[in-house]
Image (cartoon, rainbow, N blue to C red; front, side):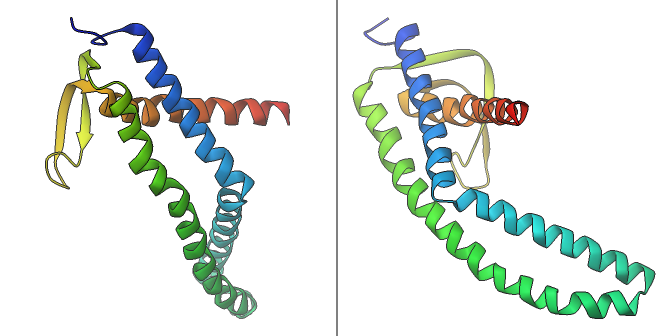
Length: 164
């Protein structure tokens, strides 16, 4: 074993950094009202579509005429969705390129081998799925970010719902 290879402290440190990064991105998107607004638009569009298809299946012409202007209005929200997604990408993409590379440069000899394999998409080509059990700092950051960060966000969401 050389240096940081399989070091539990380094493993935990990279994982903690990935989890905090995941939560920080979520926090920033919520503070800028991006994710909240996207959810509001999607919810309103889903409810409108459900009402429209219900009226369509019942052949309720009066309800269909009533919903028509709302449907046209909801199409305008598509532009807002695109703008919000671009803002989101402007926050997430710099992070996605800088932070994992920084982690790799801080822990260049880190290597972890799991007792099981994980499916890794986009390796070596875009539509390929490769199964791996060994990761460097860069890979371990992303595994932690996706799995542990996602789990942390779910847990935090349940805690917030419990308080309400």
